[in-house]
Image (tube, rainbow, N blue to C red):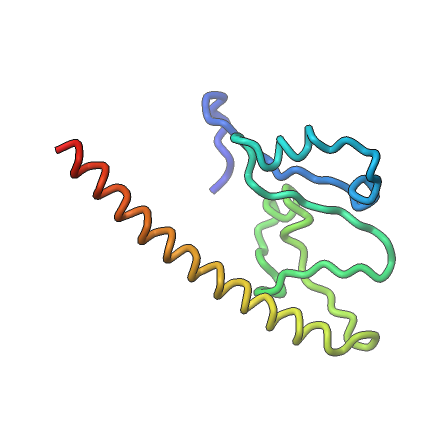
Length: 129
């Protein structure tokens, strides 16, 4: 679904911090941290790092989307995986296994949050009735 062009609808974009900024202990990143994790943030920071030898991959899907507008808008998140199979053949299998584990844990946490939310809502509305 494309973003709304209605100015009344708030939009939030991912906050990006470079790896070099992150390494600089004297750099004040409080504005970016607040933007990413504050009340109006997504709760996500994107850390960019362009040094050779770094690999970024989606642990679940090799190509998360083919939607060109999403790829242009979120290149850090929508690019296709490129595995260094000749240099590090075990990376793909290990990374995907870890991704499946993290996804599974996330789904279990979401399930428990849903259960909690349902009980909480029932309690709130029962007290009001």
